[in-house]
Amino acid sequence: MFRIHKEGKANILISIIFSIIVWWLFSMYLPGFILIAYALILFLMVTVLQFFRNPERMPPNIDENILIAPADGKVVVIEKVIESEIFKDERMLVSIFMSPINVHVNRNPVSGKVIVSRYHPGKYLAAWNPKSSTENERTTVVYQHDKGNIMIRQVAGALARRIVNYLKEGDEVKRGHEMGFIKFGSRVDIYLPLNAEILVTMDQVVSGNISEIALLK
Image 1 (cartoon, rainbow, N blue to C red):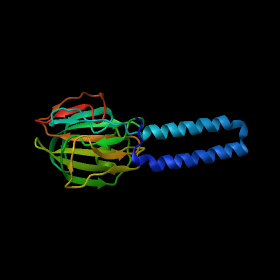
Image 2: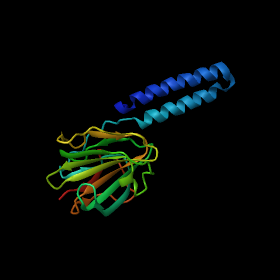
Image 3: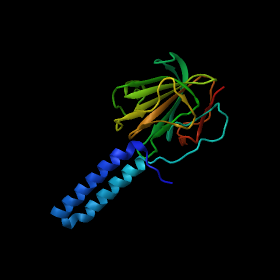
Image 4: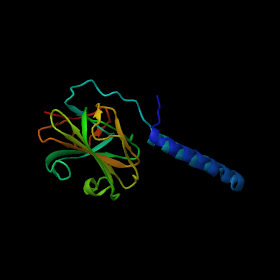
């Protein structure tokens, strides 16, 4: 079943109004080029609809200690880093780059309690730029988990101009439920304990709520 995410309703309405205006202008002043207007309208509507699609995905029935992908995209970073905002120690970082054609719904990778939820204004560097994790507009969420706390960072990209996060500190959340949405190209960073077993490889394409990212030990 094709579903549209609630974050897309205003954009779709604007696109419809814009399409009507384009059709009217071409009909009145450029009737000989009306097929171009139809092509532009079709391209716009298909682009907007595919971007805000929200496929229904049930999380797999697997061990609760397995962290699943919070987003669709490609794994672009797997490395040990110093996390300086919250943990201030070494963590394993797995980053997923979301292109404009990916589903942009973000989901909880684990069940647990939200102990940190912060928004940071910032720049709009390209999402694959390593500095984007600390300099771009972003949100930081930390989940309290029995096997160690997990941090998710939603990072805006060069095209993204709005990060949506639904979580508040103190929320008890379930793995697989929606945690937010990022409009247009962006990335999601996952900070894991050092002893986590990484289950993905570089350049692997992952699906949110389906792909297994790591085993927490």
